[in-house]
Amino acid sequence: MSQYETPLFTGLVQHAKSNPIQFHIPGHKKGAGMDPEFRNFIGENALSIDLINIAPLDDLHSPKGMIKEAQKLAAEAFGADHTFFSVQGTSGAIMTMIMSVCGPGDKIIVPRNVHKSVMSAIVFSGATPIFIHPEIDPNLGISHGITIESVEKALEIHPDAKGLLVINPTYFGITADLKKIVEIAHSYEVPVLVDEAHGVHIHFHEGLPYSAMEAGADMAATSVHKLGGSLTQSSVLNVREGLVSPQRVQSIISMLTTTSTSYLLLASLDAARKRLATEGRDLIGAAITLAETIRQEVNEIPHLLCPGKEILESDAVFDYDPTKLIISVKDLGINGYEAEKWLRNEYQIEVELSDLYNILCIVTPGDTEVEAAILIEALKKLSEQFGKADDEANHHHVILPDIPLLAMSPRDAFYSETEIIPLNESAGRISAEFIMVYPPGIPIFIPGEIITEENLLYIRKNIEVGLPVQGLEDETLKTIRVIKEFEAIR
Ligand SMILES: Cc1ncc(COP(=O)(O)O)c(C=O)c1O
Image (cartoon, rainbow, N blue to C red; front, side, top):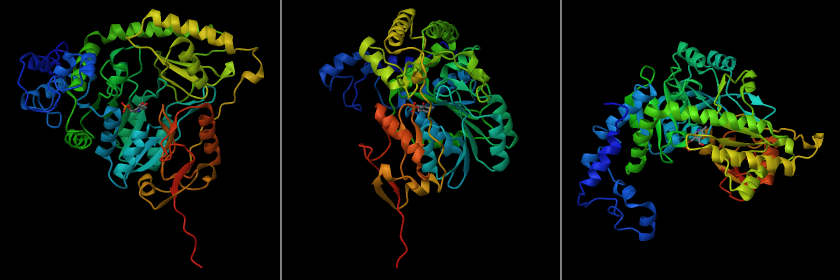
């Protein structure tokens, strides 16, 4: 089969065209049985392929037909031995990677700035995390990748680890020397699992960092929906044979996946793969050029900084993805969230994320010079409005959360006897909950960690400016569940 073919998407369309009489779910029966307003909005075409795993349409849980063919083409396109489609987002693919290699008590080496799905999988599997400090960028107030030295050290101390997880690229588009990391991990026969949520496109353009499969990694959870053109929630899990068993991966992903898999999501993966494989290089090349133009223009605006190649000087930055525009607004004397709100209110611009110091804008083949020009105009206005004289007062001091000590395994903490106490009085206690700012969804505390005053301050600062702090059972963020302490009986 050629990369120009879409066996799953084409198969579904042909099935719909044959106009079958459907006595099966979904009960909306091509839209006829649903709310007409919604039906008209979504459109008949989409509803005609919102189908289910009847025999002619294959089954994601045991693919033998059109899904198998589509996954095979995807594997070929990504340079993997096997590709598994995920309708549970990259979160589902990440949980599958970890649970495929780790059981209760097994060690897994992970950077601390991982997405919450990694921590969830650690709780579910009962694995023990061995944390590596990510490199912190003190100017931008963001964390980067991990260094070769820290990987070497972690593996020297824990050669029995069952896996090493690497975020490549980070949300901000930074990559580590993944080839070298893979080489080191493989010398210990430790498989490398890559969170490639923000890097589906890098495989398809030689001007971008190495993809996980190019670097020789064993598994990669890759968000096709984020930057590859498929529908939200659809991702792939790429697997290289050798240190991991594809059969095990198939059974774990199946355990974590709904039996009612969305064929709209699956078909969109098939179509996105075709476009990436056949036109991706040109489309991504154009996005890189557009992003570089925007970067240059942003850097001409007073008080704003959009880092480019110079970011490569840091130890943990081996390469970067120029389509990610990290725009530092801290010299304007405002925080990233204020800039985000201002852009929304004044220009109807929605950014990808903001934090205390930056906004992040992503450029994809879906953008043109029209949107780029509006962004530049808006940023010029933002700078005029907030940028006072370049005095000291405008230079915010960057604060970042510390990495707390882990007092017990996340799973033990999650299932321990707990009590609820005021968040403000929780320093020194062991957290039984996750707390994070989403996006990016990197936990500030995970179950089992000792709560520190510094991190409570960081949380308060985020709440104060209105950033989306979440994860606690108490949505008002006033209380936290901690491990219960028992006084001696007198
Ligand atoms: C680094 C990272 N990994 C994993 C994920 C999870 O991806 P998904 O939303 O597709 O489940 C995200 C989502 O934002 C992420 O930023």
